[in-house]
Image 1 (cartoon, rainbow, N blue to C red):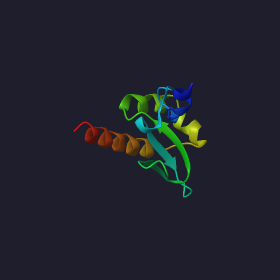
Image 2: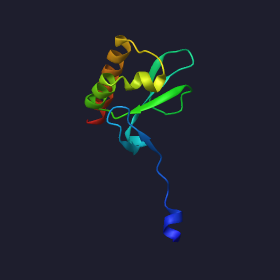
Image 3: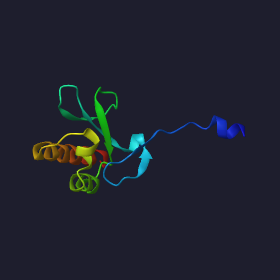
Image 4: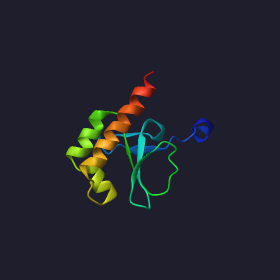
Length: 98
């Protein structure tokens, strides 16, 4: 019983693309800042409304197709923002695989 109490809790978040619960550290946080800008938040500490997504193009495509980011942020998202997120996720994914 003591082992269960001593186990460290791992925060889980749901990916807006694949809809799977995964450890927070494995996901990328997208945040809408109070200035209404959308940014990738590598620290997970920026203020604003956040949504989490797997760092893959596949999950981003699912999120776009199902308008899941628009639902998460409760507002329409322009194609330019989606393009910027896709480019940023690709850069992050490429640097992690090095």
